[in-house]
Image 1 (tube, rainbow, N blue to C red):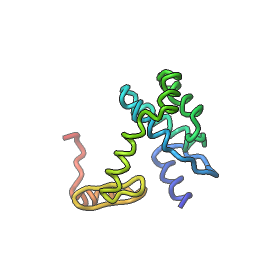
Image 2: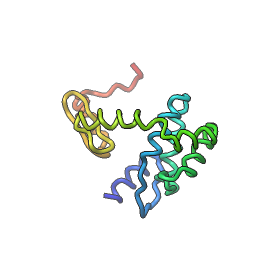
Image 3: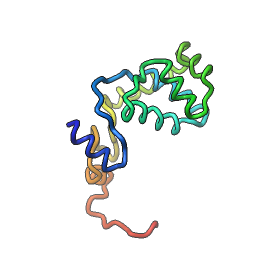
Image 4: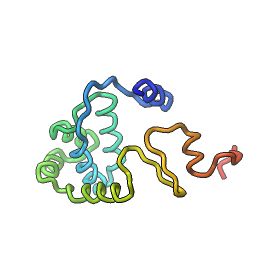
Length: 142
């Protein structure tokens, strides 16, 4: 499975290190909510993804997350305070509750048209889920 994921990541132009450990991402999710509230959500999520998957950084550690936040221009002291006080814990709890209510227990999960795909999937499977299988693709942008 690791080889398949690494191959797919390479085809998508994503770096994927050979990690030997998996780290809890809960604090990263909470800090991500804060970054989103500061209009830096996408930048933060990309930076965390790269730190975790490409560099093997332990994103369960507050200093690592503070460094990541600072790397995208967020204030270090605020980031640390958000993490220590667990300011966005309730928001992440709400996200998890909604996911479980909808039967989502793995990442990624794609839900559309009453169907569901779990895990990294080939593009063709996503087309099928969206109901696009068999529809001729347009070569122009409309």
